[in-house]
Image 1 (cartoon, rainbow, N blue to C red):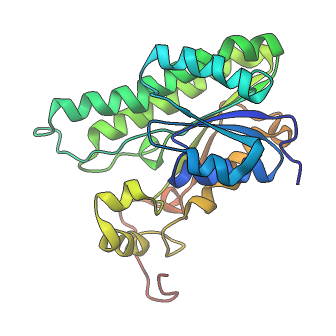
Image 2: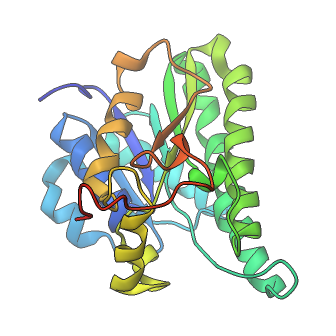
Length: 259
């Protein structure tokens, strides 16, 4: 497959979960990828072969971005023309009791990390007059959820920054879009609720199942490639239908049976 031939991608938070699925899908479609993560991504890079390399990277640190951009160009053989801002953290907390340290972490990784990533790749993409930036927001970037005020704020920020950057960079042929996953079965989501959370989540989704990283990755392939060449400033929900309904949705109707 060669939908992403000649694409050189940086994917943050790519050592596991959704990011790893995106990296596998990109390489499967002919891209070369940098697996950028604070976690160890060497095993995944080895699995993907010569088309992938791992760089340890802290998305909240401007100096780490400077080093990543320099390293990526050497490893990829060309400047990155795709950036996937996938790295993120999740913390629950009521608005009146959430520790400020958790708020600062969410802002630092989710919001600041996304901004720094766009800032880091924009100069080379502008010089090339082409590129695709894909920012991972959330369904919480489209609507609010109790106990997620801080997290929701960062995901709304990503959605807004995406649209503003799309306007700024459009004249240079650089596209910027946001992806809004629903409940996806990853280590990050299981960490806060385990299997019980997965089972509950399935009852709240019109498709009656929780998503997987492999459900999300094909959308990133589309947005990274030339097929989406007239698509920028968009927001794409991949959520099993969650954002198609509202708070009166009764959950599993019992007709289909949740997976």
